[in-house]
Image (cartoon, rainbow, N blue to C red; front, side, top):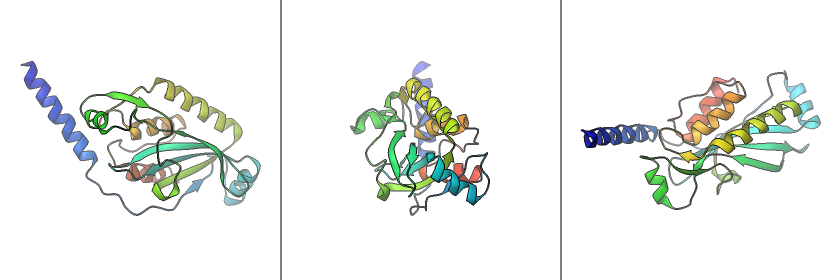
Length: 196
């Protein structure tokens, strides 16, 4: 009886993972910038960029698989360039492909920081930058640090990079799309669902 349950569970998990891979990546989208909820209007947003310069950017990038979603956060200078950005994203804790494949069936150890290509503009497939006040930024960073401390495993269907990124968005009060979308579509829908 148990082997049948294991086989059925494996088939179900494989079907969920396969369903997540059914959409196709599109050409890179332009970057989008939104203000925080308490800032209204382009003039106030431009003023905030000059005065505060804090941001979080929900981003997806191309990869050899179906892509990756993550956040970049920090400060920007008066020209809009990132200054010492930090990255938070969930991925298998290795460059080896075996744990990545196993992670479609069983949870595998994860890392929550920068991965190759995260800051390279040519790999960006979608993004949504939100400008924040200093108090908003400090709260977001505290929430990200707590999430990074507790996120120890990656699973393609149960807790993937989209799920990790969605937790950050929800902590900010945003609605989030289905975690089984390809990362480019996930970030695009996240932005659209929240008026970005």
